[in-house]
Amino acid sequence: MKSAAERGESGHIAMELKYHQKDYFYYALILFVAGTIALGLSWVAPEALWGRIVRALCWLLMLAGAGYGTTGIVVRCLIMERPPITTLYETILFIAVSSVWLGLLMEGFGRRAKARAGGGLSGGDVWTLPLPAIHGNGRR
Image (cartoon, rainbow, N blue to C red; front, top):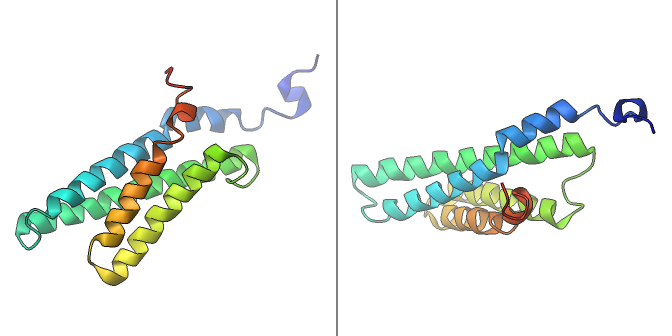
């Protein structure tokens, strides 16, 4: 039997190991949840300095979560050498990240926190669907 290197299938092993070590999707989920909590806290006193600081923190957390998720999707595309929408797992992640980016884009035009809330909630909620697949059916 030929080894993986002889078959030409070992080209992305180092990238895949780093991909699993970085755990992009898990940290994106944490950032989305933290951003959604920050958004809720900003509604307590929206005009106060504290509310504005927490609102800015929400933006940063959502951007960081979307960046982590996008990076994870791009790395998966490079490893798999195909688009990110061929399996249900990848489609869910792609839709979640796209909805967060869309929510942040819409928020940039409207500034009413509704689009940011929708993006954060959809990112955080939809992200929980593939968690068993991300972490091996709960076994870590």
